[in-house]
Length: 199
Image 1 (cartoon, rainbow, N blue to C red):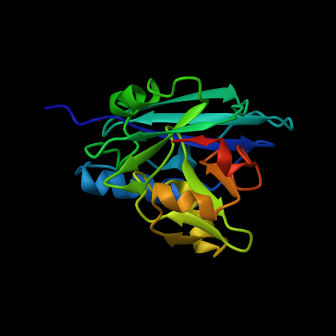
Image 2: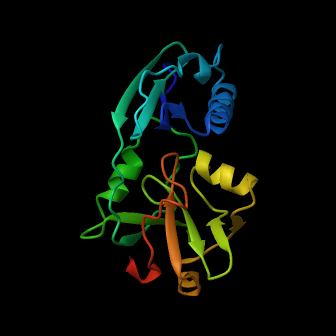
């Protein structure tokens, strides 16, 4: 039986790959969990000739025995609203290439820009991002995430954000929401108004 394929999408800025340590940690964990005979060394494939000031997505698709790299200029998605969708069975605990389950939920967004997934009564992630909520004093990310993203882990390590359980009814206690992933931190705000979350 073939082992699944995985993705690492890395922010490439001014010719430098960002947060490479956290991406390598995830590759190492994935390789261990899925019993790969060898682990991909991201630094060995990180050489690029791009040195302009634009931001690029450095996308690595890998399996146990091979990998491919695609570099594309990155354009931030405009997020105006999120729709709460509910799925108690959704599992996306590794960065699989196969995103069918997430894509099915994304199709339920209606007129909203993206979704906010609720599992077993708790807020998790959007379709492509972890989330951070700001209550006016502190920044919090759900402890009930689906996938522990590299930016999420970095912000936790830097103590810029804290973990807590967050239910849909708790959203009224927050003023701002940020969608974070490997290409976007809380400094690259996607969505500012919590009222733009549609119940």
